[in-house]
Length: 167
Image (cartoon, rainbow, N blue to C red; front, side):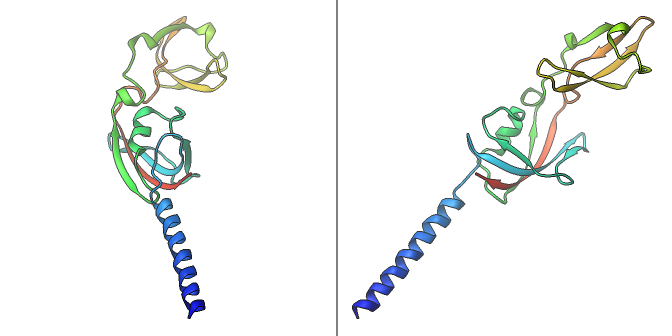
């Protein structure tokens, strides 16, 4: 009889530990410091602008400023497997369009091997060495009007996300 009680106790103990572990895993949510693996689709004005669905999923550490604030805020509190759609305003996204970021640049400062035309996008390098896009607004005889605003500035961003993993 004692062995039987001991076996039952051990089974209950193991079952209880397994339930606590499962509950702890289920309780993990997107929060500050968590590493989150997710898929997303970004639409602007009803058109798909970017998506991770045909690439590898995005991995981001929450609170490290790796993504725009509104995107990070939209993920907060989500759980593994959860899907959600949310909107990010320009203020919480890439900012409003800054008229001071549209400047006239001498053609001598632009690539010489490119036939510059209005509407085309060129890429510059920031102080950190990372490329950034600039749009040619107007071409003049000796200069070009260049828009240094992020292409997503001033736009309302619509995201559809699914959380794949949280660590």
